Length: 93
Image 1 (cartoon, rainbow, N blue to C red):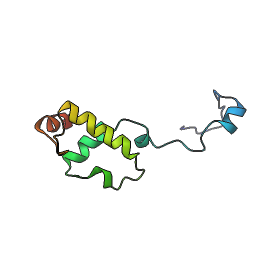
Image 2 (cartoon, helix red, strand yellow; image 1 turned 90 degrees about the vertical axis):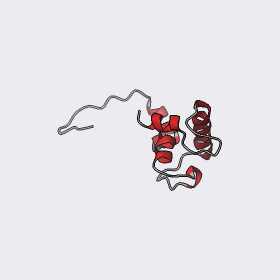
Image 3 (cartoon, rainbow, N blue to C red; image 1 turned 180 degrees about the vertical axis):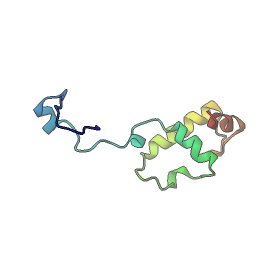
């Protein structure tokens, strides 16, 4: 956290929660967030098959499929999962 000297740490959970409820490591963000922007970016870079893309920490396949469906509903992807003109405009934002 940028500390350079001794200090105090205030935890907002109990010792029992720390030992029995918290995960040992956090889940990578790409596995727990909406992937719409990631899908748009990869499509714009020419990645056709996102389900076989070599992610460092691969998100669940269902998350990718849901994001692709949402982008299709918005008109960013066509029926073959290719980027549309609208999708190209959306990538710029």
